[in-house]
Image 1 (cartoon, rainbow, N blue to C red):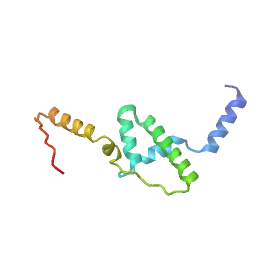
Image 2 (image 1 turned 90 degrees about the vertical axis):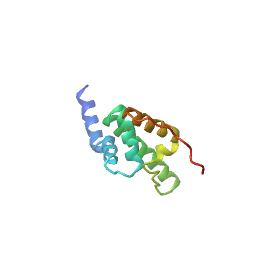
Image 3 (image 1 turned 30 degrees about the vertical axis):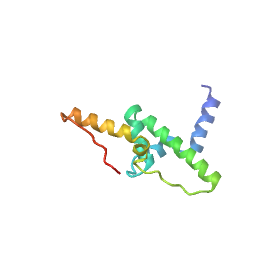
Image 4 (image 1 turned 90 degrees about the horizontal axis):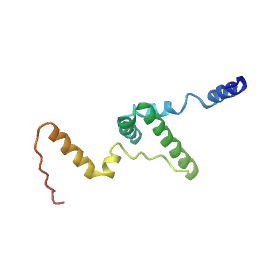
Length: 111
């Protein structure tokens, strides 16, 4: 990289700030939030750095729509992903119990 390009790049980093992963890593510290749940979900598969970037991107998109539409931020909650796919949650929990040596039979409760 030429000297001038490197100088411009360094100045750009100074203008932007610490980087998008800082906000993504900050989201994991708040326990009862959608962003923390998203971080844990992605970090389990792809690692902390990629999860931080994905969460930072989610924050950026949410900020855009909040500013554009003039609405308040509404957290979806830490159980958002469980509410999306309840069957998968049941399957995973049964699998975990079987792995611990238990036999599991499930019965639907009449609602």
